Length: 387
Image 1 (cartoon, one colour):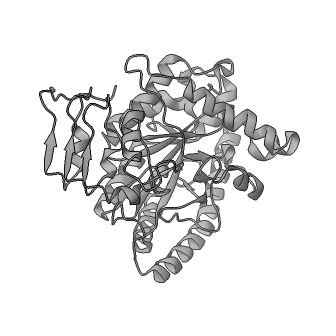
Image 2: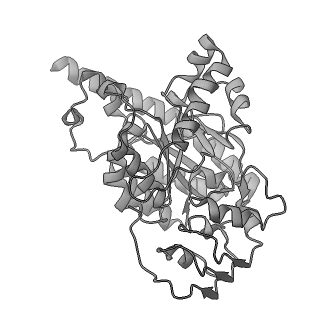
């Protein structure tokens, strides 16, 4: 008992030293960038700098769904969930259909499902031993294929093709970054780096700040970081893992002693709610990592194909959010569209024709402030939860 108490005291002291040292450097770097930018916003999608919550390790999906769905709302506080294809514990099994459904329900509520490696292998050590090509084949391309083969058991919706990647264990090197950008991803995310801020329309490596209780737990620091980030006109990526109340006992999940270290990587709903409240008070926005990359994504391929026909280069790998601002009229009649996800990026859309489709949820049209005319015909407009 005494040894455990001493260990906690040492751990607390180490965290305090680490964060005092890191925080001073962070604020200095942010204030320098704020002065250079003079608060100018680089992104046409929104005139607000913001936050991207980035959650790692999809064996935690039940926790994400249970505590995140209601707290984040429908296309409100958007987050990025970086997934693998397996459960880290329980015999390293592949994700069940129930877990896949939960991930797709998070996507249906406006969240990004991003890439975290098929088996969560350490990219540096795995590529050092097997080579980068083998790592890409085993960890990157294999997860793309796995995601493509999945669908929701009821809605039949599928995963979007990932735009961003989070390095497992935040371990990477420049060769790995170069191998992934832009052939596979627009943004690859790590942890602390020389720059703690991510500009809009970013391509390449992006840093993040971990707010799990293992790292930053001081709300005073977080609030000041948000205030300084707001002045820069850039964005913060906040890395998390589990969403769990402090009173929730990790051992109750029954994943065995080997899972105990993973249980320390958790952020409480109270902490996240405090960050959300402070960001709103400051007039900041909430983004997915793909949105920081300036990329518009779509659940419904028929809708995406219709949008692509409006672009100067329909075959471009990624659809730029900036380019969608120029679209003011859209005829989608008879295109067999069932999901409007992505329509929210057409911020200057004035007229839309949706006659003769299979759409049952029209809530995203409410995000289009300039929309004046909507043609739906005799279709019944009803609400659904994304589940």
